[in-house]
Length: 290
Image 1: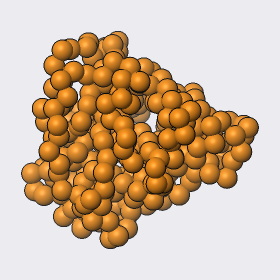
Image 2: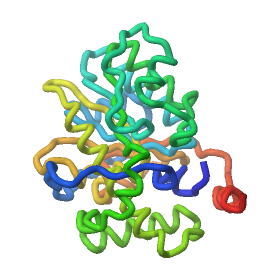
Image 3: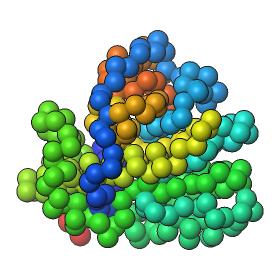
């Protein structure tokens, strides 16, 4: 993984080969006021107690934090055991692929094939996310890819209409995130095209998640923290009256105050111990020099 924000903030997919979702068919949701939560969630059960019921739970992660994938697996287990999990949508697999045709005793290879999980086509490591997928498969819960297919990448980069889907301030913030997430190493001419990919991916995940909704159950969407932000991410592309909750996961020391709850980004923060320090920008420079 080669970007600082890619790993810590969920912009990793903007570094990868992904594409666009055709415009139309989805009303932009207005940014919602977020009720302040006094403290970060401590456990999966605590998180569910404070977010359920909801038809759509958007769960952000820091991609290099194993505790976050363990949390996802536990949420899948608990919701499925209660009969409340309708589907799981993953940023880590392409839109249009799912495990819905698999039996609960399907093999991991069958699940990978169903989701088109190819390490060379995106770089998401199966050992990290496979346990989340298989927990859902074993429970008879379908897993859907929400990411943009690689073949649509070029179309997204050149699709200037995507720029109009965010207001000017939000668009500028997304562009700043892309610039920072790539350690200021991208040529300026690439910033707008890469931002369009980020916008198109959020649009794609929103459509996939709403298409998977089932009455009386919850769809769990797992993506990088930046993708689930109420003010910039997937929520901007949900139907205007669609109910949902947002949780961001941060690898940092637990604190008594919840910094996210006082912003428009999320309803709840879940924290885990900090990860060992890594110089992601140095890693990116080495890869770009190859």
